Image (cartoon, rainbow, N blue to C red; front, side, top):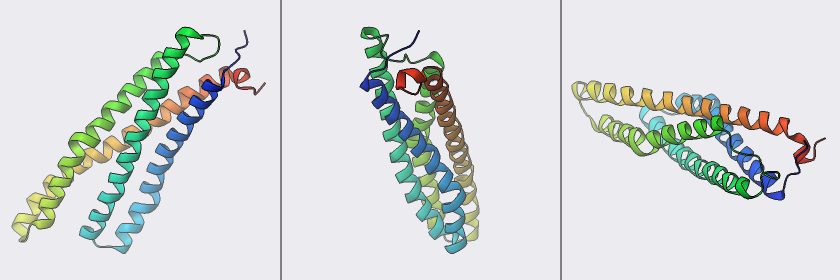
Length: 178
């Protein structure tokens, strides 16, 4: 049975696609271009401070994208109740991936990210080698977890994009592509 999509479905899908592309592309650019350039140009402390600002902006951006993804999923769920033939439902897989994305983003933005910033500041303020070593060790332990969570989040964003592409291809006629 062919679906006929509404302008709502196309607009929501476009918002989701743009958000996920920015999320994935932003992380890719930061990891492959910005970080190497910063550490090849600046010292460790200056580079660390600069990258902290870069990741603060990236975290704000991804938080906004999470709001967009949750908003579009909630709107699709609500509209599906009233127009099931015109709106694609949010699958369980999509909800599960979105929930994981929200949890990991929350961990980064609200808990581990601020803790890593605090530890980084303590490491930069340490003056003697005896103070610096344990301060940097504590910072890098936390920072390693934050980096891993960013990579996990990138993987979750890619997974959500794959789920959405599969759904869009399955119902491509609904978007006027057949």
